[in-house]
Length: 445
Image (cartoon, rainbow, N blue to C red; front, top):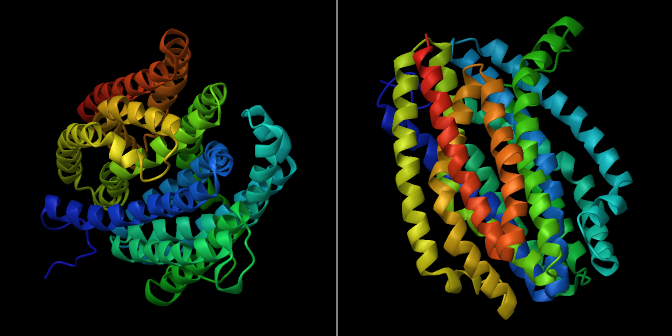
């Protein structure tokens, strides 16, 4: 009988579906987490919604590094599991979490001391900046509750179990959905905290997910060990993770940098444009969640099969995933273009915001499919120990191509020009990744 968590046996399509569907639920839960915040904060007013949108680039920058750590941990742990080396996988899980907490502490200290200059640089006016600072002071403290379970859930997924992390994240969404209106508007006798209430709800819900993730890792998976390793062992594990995490995290850093550039451009048009870009970005995450899930599935699937030297299964999984990504992108573009106004009206009723979100959904989704292709190939290359080519694709896509044409688009056609430039950036990145992957596959032995 085939072990459901063993990704080195059985139908490739079935295994990818078994990984991707729960991962999609987890990713949708993460997006829903942000959408719920956006929905309730939007009811406070345009200023509060703009303040929340200003936090998005900074949160993405920090989360880029956390994602890099998760990718490095998944690749390392999945390959050990593929080789049936459970004790080594447990050591790697424990050391990856300790490294994550150390790096998180660094981000918290730097973040708290740079609140004012950071958001002034992004273009927040004095009134909006006060709201942003109130939110981020709480969010930074809660960052430990975000990073540790993220890497812990990455370790659980490396075993071939994508269902448990998804359920943990869904639990966080439910808690956040309950706490948000209570703490934001002051229901059930709680004080009305406004935007700050959204941050407190996030902190509480994330803390609970950390407890659940560690329970699974310790009691069920036996992937946490409590003995203190030698410095040589610890350094070796951290180095292996960082070899993937650093280039991956730095490459992902250029994405929020690009988002920050766009946010700054939007701020020059007013709060309505910033709010519209924030809403459009969140809808994009929701529409692309299946592609993000498929890309995330590459880590455990490729890792286990690469570790057990089943390279034909790796190649076939990548081929199937790329084809699906392209088709899904075309489908999502068609749906969002058709119902753009209706989708936009869920989050805000300001006419200017609605018009801008509608333009976003008519234009940017044209690149979703090829952006998904880039994500799948990036995850694959990272897992097979090719982090530098994977990272270089993203750097060229965003810094060399994306930012210059975004400024050009803004000059030539205003807000719509920025959206067109973003779609072109997605398309060129996907095409580049296909060319790189083709060359890598020829050398793949």
